[in-house]
Length: 92
Image 1 (spheres, rainbow, N blue to C red):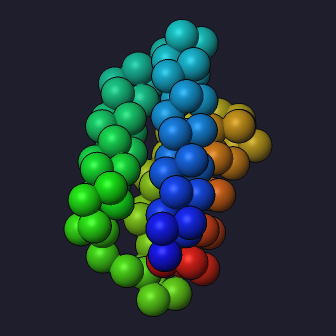
Image 2: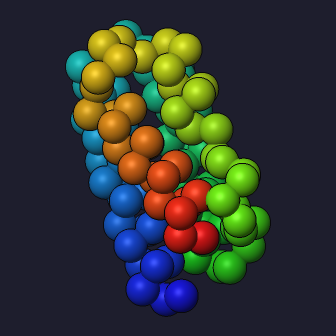
Image 3: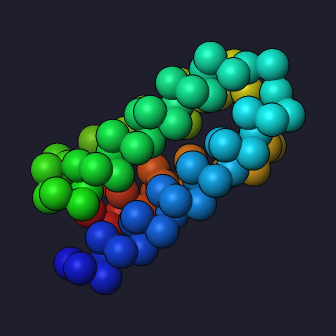
């Protein structure tokens, strides 16, 4: 389980880096700041062992929230969030 958690944190860190870079290039700063806070909260829960397991059913809602305001829909940030969601559902 440690390896799965480490990989999940790596995906989270990657999404955080993309979100922070996107702030510099976007006019959606409020949305991005909220997203970063949400992702950091998930990371903290993972690190302290308090993230509820997905069991293949539950998702984190990251992609759904961001898809409402991000453009273009094939953005690197949305792809990174999709990778987090998939990993969560398939491995945690």
